[in-house]
View (tube, rainbow, N blue to C red):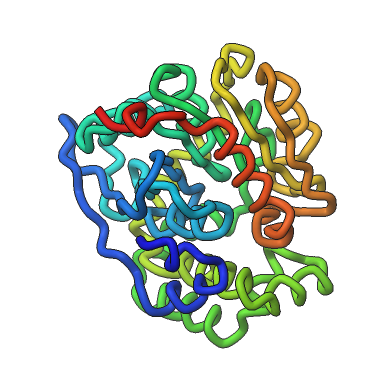
Length: 310
């Protein structure tokens, strides 16, 4: 991707006109799907639940500055990456290291949102010499106590029915504001986000993606739910520069239990506090988060190009 393609003013045009074809890297356990875009220091991008490489790519387009090489991954259980590559965040972290090996990259930062956080944390823990920075967005610091609603479990059955998934997509297309209301309940904040010429199309793309190929996103999503309900994280052992981004009104992962605690427990971590932001704070507070991420990455990126390629 050229520098012009990374310019925020062109994001909406690119999002509708250009969806890169993912590549596949063969690991010892099977294929890992990813998109490789841009030049510069490498940054791994890890999506959350109901995601895939397309949402990893959206993460980079929402808060990723230009002049970096982004590797947008489909984690195990999502789209073209089978769950057999690794259910645990430790295994997923190791698959990311294998991807770097295959591309001849010695070091990368990791940018992760929501359910991608555990794998990112373990990449920093297991491969600290390969991780030059960690950006954790709306992710968990400890076990998640609340159970998903019954409708979430019904989705596993209904997603196999073609007419149901078609109806999901049509509902999003007919009523973008209604689809967005579940993520941004505040009317003024939702209207402002959707009306933003740069952020609005990105958030709409997120809504559309979650209604696309639903059945191919569910194995990883159910695995993520199981991980977040059972997994603890030795955050105090993280020894790489870390930026935590979290909304104070996050209903899925409450700020005090997760964002605030994570920033406190990780040595030297910086915190970007999105006041009033919910779980999608990188969209509603993008104008605050994007420059903070850019400053963080520039501050910690490798000094010499030779540090990013083997």
